[in-house]
Image 1 (tube, one colour):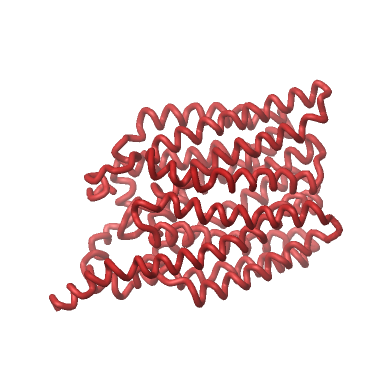
Image 2 (cartoon, one colour; image 1 turned 90 degrees about the vertical axis):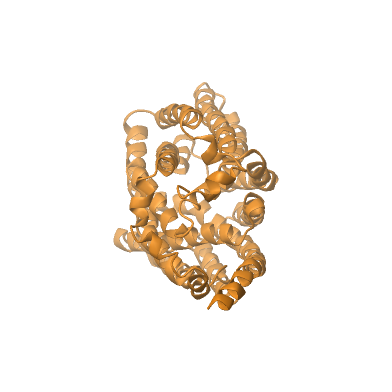
Length: 431
């Protein structure tokens, strides 16, 4: 038994590196083509909902419902993937998303539409959580941020192709883009089946550390909430989701109704945002590795403030008769938003996929569930604020929230949680 453990110990050092490289190469291809299909989908999705419902409040309800179904099962999916492996559960995301897209194609009433939303976002939730953890587990410790940046870069390249396709050719019915996305998801499923592997197969992990899993029997929920450091992270990332969702749950619908921009204008905004993501994605991932997660998050929040201040300024210029400036200002906003997101995402994923090393996916799913509960009412709140108060009120609330978040990062997000290179923190039971 001793010799077997020694063999497995050596294999554990060598096997993840080889499998990790294979996974990352496969993920590069899937990220690229998924970026094409998903961007086409999300460009036409809100206009599709608006045409279908003709109500910004109903759109807020639908987007909230999509968020609920996306996060609701994540802790349990994560727990099962920790036990049985990542790949097994990644088999289910594409079929569910494809089923949802089929419902969208044939939707002629609200019931079919909502059924499609439930299927699509359930599959999206499975794929999102497994993808995040798989990227981190397939990466070496010093290259997690940069690898996440490279994959984001490739997805952004795909996004450009999707944006250009919608931008230059508006002859197609919206449902045509759903069909293209279905084809891409089928290709992705083939890649997952034949070219994605668990970084450490579950059977091997049990043999290498047969008692490791038993140490977590008190439950991930209890472990997370009984440690002050993880409570701080959970609060921060939950309040982050709530604050930004107040504005973004109906952002596209809001600018459609306020400024009467077209589907092609949305495609242009998406294209500019995607180009910005391509420019900043890899440097931002490298930045997170170099300066640490806490500083990267503060840097990100400063650009979040700039973005929402620009949206308010844009409204007042538009109201003053400078309507020709609205599209250039919104494009500028997309560039600033890209800096915010590319610096935030690597720091977020590195932090949130390491809440519990023995149950990475389950603990990550718990965090996503808590964040999801936080954003549940935001779509409805934002819709009511825009309709009954004023278009810019959600932006003002988000600005106030971001200022609070910066203060919280400085005050409570301890350096030994957030900064790179704290070896004691990485090996302590609290992390």
